[in-house]
Image 1 (cartoon, rainbow, N blue to C red):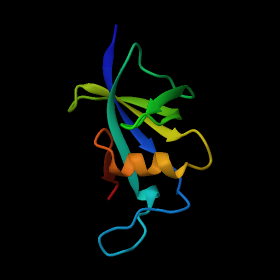
Image 2: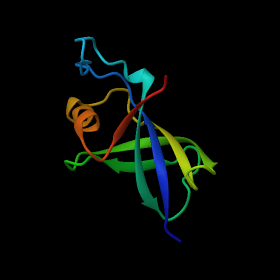
Image 3: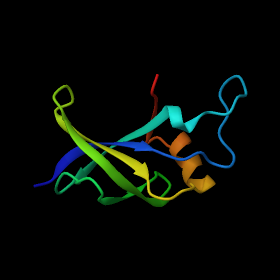
Amino acid sequence: MDMDVEINLKIPRPKTPALDDNGYPIDTYAIRFTKTITVSAVPKEGAVLPLSTQSGQTFEAAVIRSDWHDSRDMFVVYCKYAQRSIPQEIYDDLMRGADWTAKPLL
């Protein structure tokens, strides 16, 4: 049975981070990227999910945990970027693409 889940993605710092309105680098540790995807089953902790950006860049994310959220009426799957570093193209797509939403933790 297919279902929608929200991906909550943590990424590493890129070599060249985007700048905020004041010209300071944006700290990716204080941001999570979210996107709703359709899956056949709720991903389990330790699973690796193939994800993509709007421009077609693909990458893998490791599942940290999955929690049910009554307010959203769906599972939220918390993930981290699977590699130690993130290519600049993928980082740029996450920051500027319409399919991922950057949400500050604070």
